[in-house]
Image (cartoon, rainbow, N blue to C red; front, side, top):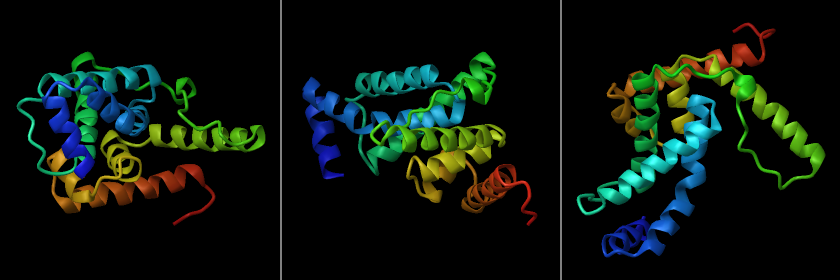
Length: 180
């Protein structure tokens, strides 16, 4: 958090290196969240780019009150929502989803990771957007339920219920033989 405050101050003074550092620090996190919500890596890249361009353009008015990570994640989610509303964006079929996984493991482990990740992406795509959003923000965006509730303009209990119902539905999609 202290590093974020210093970076924001340096950006306000015109330090482009600080903006680059901030971008490198949060890019993958925001990409993962955006791609998980819209199942399209190219659109996710556009969303993340828009978030940082808008952030840099309004930096003089920006005041850091909480977590910069949560702020940027919320901005990315709002951009995704805007794209869905504005262009009546249809969520792409899961088979067109490009994984943003790691290739650091060997080919066998990477193939298993890719297969499991694809199964999870397919299952996530079947959830209602509100449930998917809470799950992605909590697990991948590392946001607290209180922050998610504020972002979605719902009560804390509603955000928690969306998470619980979403996980239950994911379990039933991924393992249909298990009846709860």
